[in-house]
Length: 364
Image (cartoon, rainbow, N blue to C red; front, side):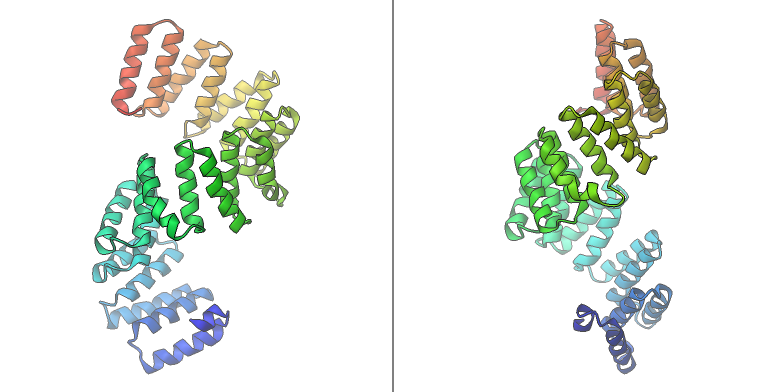
C-alpha cells in the first residue's frame, strides 16, 4: 500500500506476487494484486485472478467486492451489482461496497432501488457517515430539502471542507432559496478545489439566481478560458451578459455553446431567446424545432412562455397540446392548459385542467 501511495506500482506488484506465492489463499493479497494488475490495464487478467481465488474460496467477501469493481470497469454494470450484492450477503458491514451500489443506482436514477439499498446500509452501519450522506441524498431526491439539510448539518460540522458534502449542501440550500448559504458552500468547494468544474458551474448558477452577473463572469473565467471552453459555462455566461444588457456578448456566448455542443437543446434555446429579444421572429421556428427534438420539457416551457409574452394564445395552446402528448402523466402540461384557458377567459375549462394537474401530482 505504501509503494502504491509512493507511485511505485511495479515494485508493489512484485511484492504482491511474492505474497501470493507464499499464501495463495490470502484474500487481501489477491485483491490488491488484482487491483494492481487492473491499474496497468490488464482487467481481464485481474478478473481471471479473482475468479481463481473465488473458486478456492467462494465465501471471500472481499474477492466478490473486487470482482464487482473489475466488472464495472469492463462496462458490465449489472454483473458488477450482482457481485457487490453477493459480497454484502457474505459481509454486510462493508461501507465501500454499499457506496458502490448506491452510486450505480443513483446514476441510473433508480430512487426506489437506492432507497432499498440505503435501508440495508442503515441496518448494517447505522452511524456511518456514508449512511447519513445517502440518507440526505435520498431526502433531497424526494424533495424533502429540510430533512436533507438537517441530516447534513452534523456531517458538515465534522468535515466542513468535504467537497461532496458541500456540493450536496449547496444544492439543498439553493432549493430552499437560501442563496447566500448556497453560495458560501459552493465557494468553499471552489476555494479548496479551483479546478473542479462542477463546483464553479453551481456557484455561477447561484450567483445568476441572485442576479449577480459580474460575479458569475468572474467565477466562470477559468472555464471560459479553457480550450475548448466549457459549454455549460458559456450558456451561464450568456445569461449573465443578458442581465448586464450586453445582447451582442450574450449571443456570441450562446452561439459558441451551440457550436461546441450541437446536441444540447439548452444552448440553442438560449441563443434563440436572445435573437427573439433582438426582434428576430425566425427564432420562434428554431425553438419549435428544438422542442420537437427535445425529450425533456425545458425548451417547450421556454417556447410557450415566449408565445404567451407575445400575446399569441393560439400558438401557445398548440404548443401546450404537443407538451401534453409528450408528457401526459405529469402535472405541468395540464397546469399550462389551465393557464391558457384562463387567458381565453374559460374559467370552467381552466378549473378542469388544474384538477387534472393535481390528480397527476397532488403536491404540484
